Image (cartoon, rainbow, N blue to C red; front, side, top):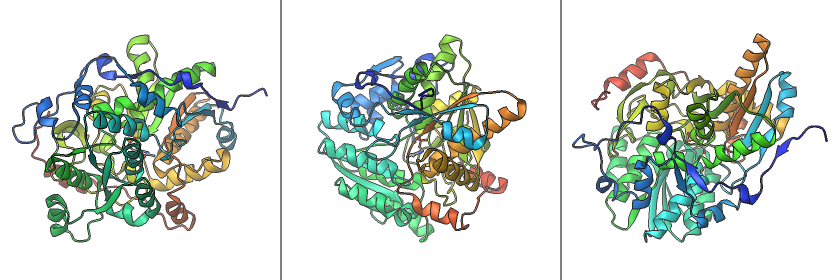
Length: 454
Ligand SMILES: *Cc1c(COP(=O)(O)O)cnc(C)c1O
């Protein structure tokens, strides 16, 4: 075989350490602030929500954090994940550029999310926690955490955004199969949920609302901790196993990317694939372009503002320095449920502000078109979130071809779409519509913010 399609690693290649980009950032992210006092939060403020080891990881400036043997061992259920040279897609596009993708859909939950769910459940179990509460959008995070909690014999309770709860019943059943309890959000089980329902009984829900509900349950129960599937520093750090493996795989392929691309919800899979390459930009003289891709219906990176905002809708979480559309912003019910989040993590926000990464926003019909083309060329049906990355890859190859140059592009295929076929059905029957937020809607959501500016 002249051409190598699949680039695989050995179990011994599973990384031994997570990479913490904070150590290499020229401007460190600003500290999160207490929602009441507006002073930087300390470990004691976070202790009701998270186990101490994760709080330490949240604030550490050490460049490398060792992955516990038990976690590496569980990673080996599906890691190292394969990388593919996308010969089929290159041919379908007729491009002169080279396309590679790292495939995270081989995990039991079908996405990158177990990369952080496993260590989070591990540290909670080590500190004797019996129950974890969380939110989920499309159900990817909820299923990953349900799986991880089951492995460590921890009870798991999930608030699932109502549009997804109704539209993606198999994700819920997956969580139930791994032993979790799932509620549609907003629910009448919490003050947060009841306050939203009082204003809008037909609220489709949002990640911000579901976070408020899960945080409230954890904060009001001594035996329960909270867990977040994106945004926070330790979550992004856990995901760097993706990029650390990808570095080795690119080396095996005898190549190095000019551009690294990933879809963007809160920033975890983007950070996972991009940060180890950015390390080489920051310390090794490389110049990879890293592009985060968001939906036009929820364009915080391309049209939001950089200021302190809450991670949730009701205002219970610490204030995070982030690109945001405002915590009251309710994105249109697009199918990429995992990207319907008003804000972004502090690290990725700082990197964007400093011009060290780029962002683009794409409509969902362009994304599904890209997903259909990809599935025909490469076989895998991508998650609706992942199609955003593919659509950007196509944009970049077209631009390179128009300029008469060849680029080497790596993207993160962060999950498969086998539980998202309802959205493909809508696309195929011509019912899928685009949502572009009006500037008026963004302005009115931002006008409600009273949080500190930066
Ligand atoms: C959760 C999720 C996302 C968005 O979250 P990030 O933290 O930005 O990665 C994207 N794709 C898939 C498949 C997801 O499950």
